[in-house]
Length: 104
Image 1 (tube, one colour):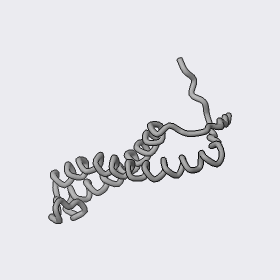
Image 2 (image 1 turned 180 degrees about the vertical axis):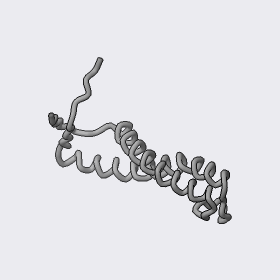
Image 3 (image 1 turned 30 degrees about the vertical axis):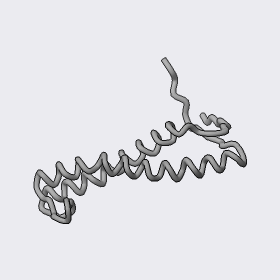
């Protein structure tokens, strides 16, 4: 079942939430793979230009993950929020949802 909603603007908080969830989940896979490679001796994780390997490489990669996710989401959010604001001056935004979640 599809549902379409026409809105004037999307809230900045909702936009950031969507971007942060999308970036953090996808970047987790990347950072985890880099951490696993570092655990086995690959120089995939660096701290201050020094390669970190072993268990500390894995932990460093996992510690870097939320920082990079938040920073990238914040940067993209600023650009997208401005673009959507400009778009909202011209016409409304149509959002299409594929399935509706039932509330209890």
